[in-house]
Image 1 (cartoon, helix red, strand yellow):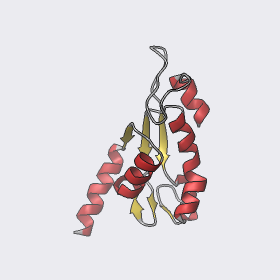
Image 2: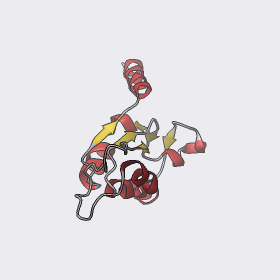
Image 3: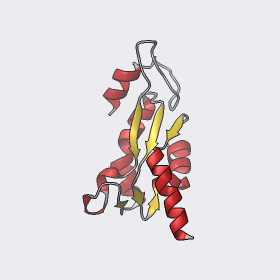
Image 4: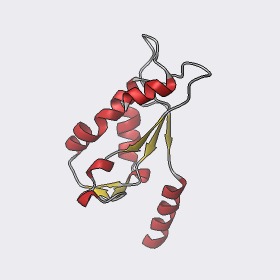
Length: 128
């Protein structure tokens, strides 16, 4: 994933602060890495389903590529449509704020898909 970020945004100069956007110039574009986190580990490999694994394995297996992209100045990270231990990623404050923003040092924008927000509204409606 990191080489794609560098190809799209350009190579950050030495000393560029980790976690912050870098785009080389007008011939480059902003990259978005998708889908944070656990998509490759969903139960029964069902797309947009539930990832059931320990936090240690989630971090070790699924978060490593995102750390590499953050170190290269990626501008946006899109939250996964999947869940981790039954919690939808788009509504998971622990993973998006405590882990991605605070622990991993991502300082830029977390994106969400329109469809994901519609699903979240539907889930909230059904639970009432």
